[in-house]
Length: 139
Image (cartoon, rainbow, N blue to C red; front, side):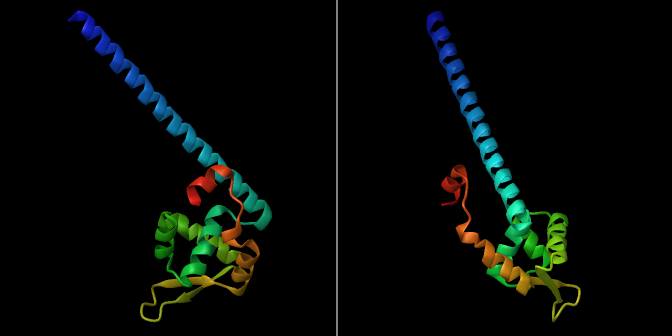
């Protein structure tokens, strides 16, 4: 009886160690994904003078044509405050323009300018070369 109890304790301890190691591996994989995204963002900034949030905003506007800042925040998964910063940045770069809502003058809609469309046509969002670890996730 005591031997069986010791064996059970050892078995559960081994399982806990295995589960802890698996959790550690998940964290390491997340770290690798984060590093790949950071590297990709650095490349975007060097090549296109855009950070990843700015580029995602432009690609989103290309798909949707016109969005409010709240809709943009939701589409990008950003807080409204961060979305406003991104919109302000790409607006200063003359890549987006704002217009008043026809029915509710409190709402602003944002859409790509001709400069924004030209910038995206040069970038070709669908043809961006991804790091290997991101290819497995995206494709």
